[in-house]
Structures are given as C-alpha cells and as structure tokens.
Image (cartoon, rainbow, N blue to C red; front, side, top):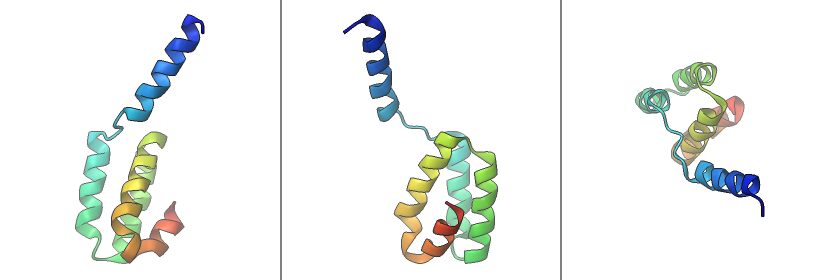
Length: 81
C-alpha cells in the first residue's frame, strides 16, 4: 500500500469516529426539544434547521431526531427528511 492510500484510509477512519456535532446542531436540538410538544411547531423549526445546517450536520440531526422522536413525530420526520 502506498503512502497516499494509507493517508486516505486513516482519514476515513478518523471521519467515521469524529463527532460532527457543532454548536449550531446543539442549538437546533435544544430548540426542537422545547417545541416537541407541538407537531406543527416542531415541523416549522425542523425546516428552518434544514436551511441552516451543513450536509454532515443534517445527517447527525436526522439520526438524533429519529432516535428521539420517531414514536410521536414519525410523519413529520418522514416529511422533512
């Protein structure tokens, strides 16, 4: 294996282990947690979050949303994601 392949492999391992949560993702999670009692408000805030976040952050948010709100808000999550 050449040096370039070793570097790429190491980078890929690092990226899989890296936690992508940024202050913005944490902020969005806080907001969504506070509005989760209202389906329409949750959907509105989730759409706003989608416009603010980067693709990697959206994946993290999607995983978090499904793990925390799939029981109550599955229709909203499926609509947004």
